[in-house]
Amino acid sequence: MVSGPKKYEIAYILTPSLTNEEALIISGKLSTLVEEAQGTVRHREDPRKRRLAYHVKKQDYGYFGWITFDAAPDILSEIEKKLKTMKEVMRHLMVVGEEVPPQPLRTFTPRPESPKVSPRPVSPESVPVTEKKLDLEELDKRLEEILGK
Image 1 (cartoon, rainbow, N blue to C red):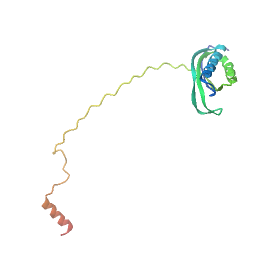
Image 2: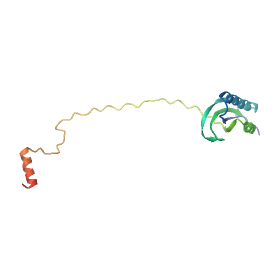
Image 3: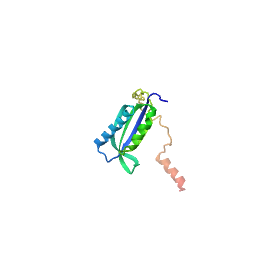
């Protein structure tokens, strides 16, 4: 059963022993591989050398790139077989692409400033009195009482 074309994406990692120009040539070969299998390339991201998150075939670095394309589902196995035979491709992943609707741009709206609160003036009457004021004579009497003199 042949159905209409679907959106797909191939992500791949090329060996780090290639030069930048050789990596671009291999990326072009991958695009022609998809086109030869009756697929339509929508976008091709040129591979760039990246540090890998973990070792792939004992390598720390690799050229990472991807291709998005439209193709009939029955030709994916053909593309997969050809990808596995390419010795420059260390790892690849082919997934069904998802149509993501464009999101409206978010605009920044600053918060309204809170009103500035000015400090109230402090009057001597508004300060609570916590201590009773003593004069010196009264203080001496109290000390004598406490010390027992």
